[in-house]
Image (cartoon, rainbow, N blue to C red; front, side, top):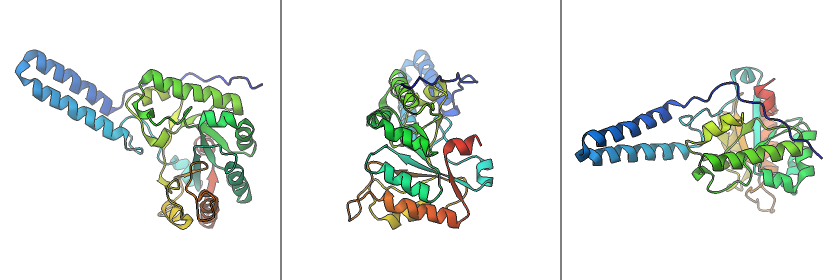
Length: 276
């Protein structure tokens, strides 16, 4: 049995980012305009519609920081140490993840696995093996719902909070980082993550390995202008299959790790980079 790992309370009160403050002001201004000049309601409605369109577009931009804090690169101190974070999404997968772990071991590298909690619960020994080998398991939601970015505050809290509890019970380590499914989110996510003491993490560059089956193309995307402090994204589940039927990550990952070593860079977990 694994005891639930307690979650520390956030140290600071959540503060709305400037875009959300501006959005609230837009709504209040539109309401005031209609109240004082009812004939101008089309203008008020148009302003609110434009505001909603901007919020939606921002949520569809995974690397945006307008809806709240979003880690796109490692801190300067990690860059100075020559560190890169290799992250793998959507696992664990019993056919792929063990091979990924062996590749990482062979290169002396550490990685961060953003796991879907229900998938990890189906393969609890594998989730524990990830941690046992010195890697990190982080939160990639409970089910990886396709409508994740359409959930309200209560739905987001359930989806992310239950994943936190499930992953903590499986690994005895409570996640400190969260990655949204497909990187999509909405204006409600930032306060929910704050309440759960989680940090939103996106990426510096990605290989698009869920649809690109050529390992050299994946490698080129990951290593173009590769530098210390980068966060790179691959998948140990849902990856595109090469001609031999194997997922492309199994060939792209060792090529990436060799390139990192050749550049004098080290692959570390996100917790190692953020809390050395």
